Image 1 (cartoon, rainbow, N blue to C red):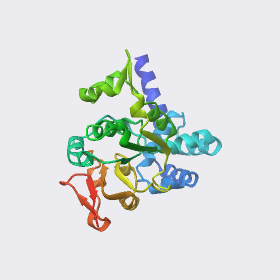
Image 2 (spheres, rainbow, N blue to C red; image 1 turned 135 degrees about the vertical axis):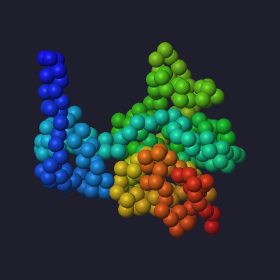
Image 3 (cartoon, one colour; image 1 turned 90 degrees about the vertical axis):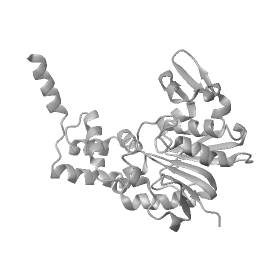
Image 4 (cartoon, rainbow, N blue to C red; image 1 turned 90 degrees about the horizontal axis):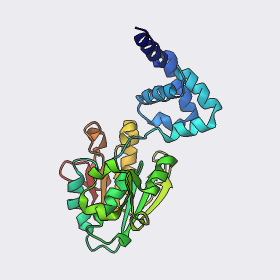
Length: 278
């Protein structure tokens, strides 16, 4: 009985109710982080969860913490769109490799941008898959994120062995293994340049052959998603490919509303597009 009572008390302590005051202070947090206004309003759930982790019992308390703690404010900004990642994620990967990456066979050089790269699994996936068609030294990847901790993990290229099952055995020669972890070898890691890029505010790179921007746009409001779609398409070379998310929860979000207007061709009703050649 005592254990149950303690459990109930703990649950009550961590619950943050959502009243009009919460929305008021959510808007005050937007004053501290203006780009938050470009996100969907359900980000208030992220604010609540983050507040709980910092032992704040209301959105108001967390707002006060953000006002006085610059380090926490920085962490909050960088974690706004953080999600986990996996190697060769999603049912469209095989299609993407066979239909899109294979078209670069024999190319002199291929420039790839992994936007919102998270901890790097997708970065190494595309390098490994493309290495079937061209030598590693002809691949240049820009891996960008808004979270410096994720960028550092991507640069290191080291993951726990439980993730080995996500990587086809034909790519295992690219790995250096030990008892608990594996690291992509230096030849692979040398293909990667990293940069902190905020998709909402920063200038996008240009003349890119392949862009992967997956599982991130769904956090933004519809008009911002449409704006990002346009900027991503303009960043591509003619004939280049844009690979968006194909997650069940975000597929409708990731579809480009009017691809023809942006000079894009949608491939087989997938969240994969190719830029038309003029």
